[in-house]
Image 1 (tube, rainbow, N blue to C red):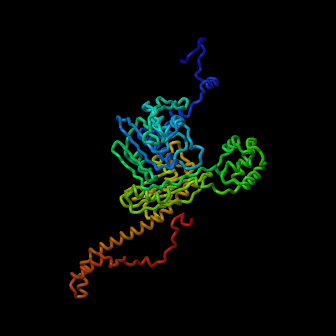
Image 2 (cartoon, one colour):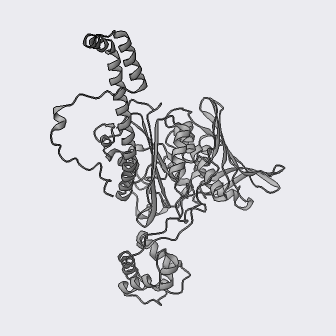
Image 3 (cartoon, rainbow, N blue to C red):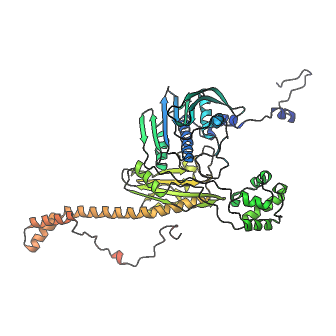
Length: 549
């Protein structure tokens, strides 16, 4: 029966607008991710362990590269119980200054990379804070952090995240003398997890990281022993430069916000100062199309005028954005990385010229390893990278996978299932480098399927595939020649006896000479001529859709 009030009237379960208003309150971004940790890559206990190591290693590599320091990384995973682990990650980077330590590790969306248009592994200011949040959610233990910039002190502190206020909560902070002048960061987390060793594991992630970053020295001390990924080069990649946004990639809302906050005195100087590739004449063309005066203050531009300005920016022909904001792996380092970690017979790497999507520069690189000790059965292995970071999850929903599957691998001498991956002893490495990688989620595990990106990946694969096809053909020809020689060797006694009958000479020395000629390669064995080979052949199609590029 429905509940009644003191006068006997039924009490309604329906809420009024006033009731709803009373329940409205603000939540912090930390509290949001506390309830939605799967968005950061913590769907399950085994993936959580990998995500924590990934975020720590990515931060360390970014910090070392920004400071021009050859990376020395150490990752330790120690099992404390059935589902309890301690993870320690240490680097030799520049460290974190004392004034920023708490915010750098204890405040979500706090960082230095979000507004920079240049290639880096991290961008959102979520990574390592998400790891600390997961640790306190599953074990209640604070993160233990050591850091020094190389001065006289090493700072050690314990930290939790106040999720309601999105603020760091330091429970302990001590200093120790820095006798060795160590610089870097060490972070220790106690977590609930499940340790696995398979394709999507810490070991596999570090192996692929070593391929993409051969200038890094990585030591992994795991539950099953120590693995070392040695540095193969002391040459650091070129340091990417920060660029300004390009007019072709700006959204209307962002343009309005930029005009409201700019220090430029007029709209002409705003266009020239806040965007790349906009000079005086380009700015004048944009303003003429938008029917705006050059001397107008940006903050005075109304929304309808801003919309005209935005459309005009897309209409004027501008030079593509600069590409020195990108740092590719390079063909040499890709080949070196593949050779270091994979035993194959053939290696090739291709770096495409930079391209643009939505005003953002990007560059695609492809490496292929074939034969040798690679698995000859089943589908080829695909190594996906974004800004030198391995992507191990959500492969089926990634633009890289779609591009690989759309390539006709039969043209390059490989088998291929219908609309799927090539089959055979092959590893396909695809690296996507950009100032802004269009990930499909905050977990940064798959790249969105932009047509421009898929097209460039396919063209890079086709370039590498032509080199692979030459090797496969020569290998097949050599194998067929060997089979013909073996077949001939089997019938040498029969041939020698036939020659004995024809020449009247003893067959034994004839047999010996034929065997010696085969072993020395002086006897050329050809296939019998086929009538079909004399027929007029039809014109063959182009080798692939990238042949005419």
